[in-house]
Image (cartoon, rainbow, N blue to C red; front, side):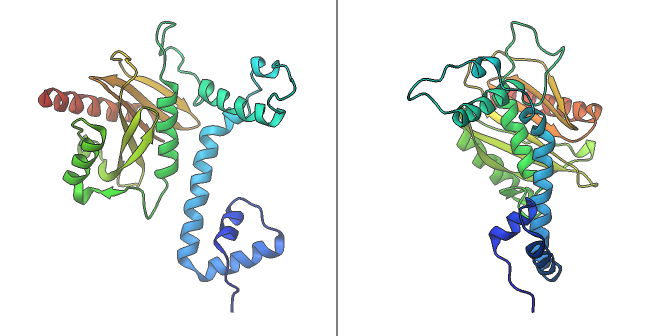
Length: 257
């Protein structure tokens, strides 16, 4: 009989942290346990998506300003500086540069785009629980998210472009609750629309696009909302989806008054 494997060992297996003997034991367990094997595949897919999105940021050099910070008694230790540096680099460089899509006078809401990309990378690979409320309860989903965000929301219809609503979920954001809607096509490719109330006073913007390691993010601010559409599709198809979302959302917000 195959020895039972603990949850922490499954995670260690995905992360490549087991010795050879234990790795073989876990693989034997997975061969006899389809449910755990499916969970392990989900976790591995999430790891690949996160590495694809963020490894370039982790490999960037320590910012000069942080590298030159003096060390005094009671000052932060080098490892704490490294943690601070990681956050600084992520805030300034995540997902590359939006070359040609901003001017010196326009501040790209980097944290907003970062959060949208992270949410996409975390939830879009999920097989069993990609959404919190599925599309069979779409009216409840939209009403619930609207109530939590404090304003009427609308889930765009991408049916004409081959994508159907899977559902959505509520997420925390830097300015309050955030809504995420998820869509899927016949090939099981997924895109997510991340919606937040724009509480920072940013003026309305045209589309901006950021691309990194196969992930496309089109984002814009309109009528007090910030939107980010994320997906691992070609830029032309993502632009078509973003255009459709913009038109439908603008009509819906106008109707809401």
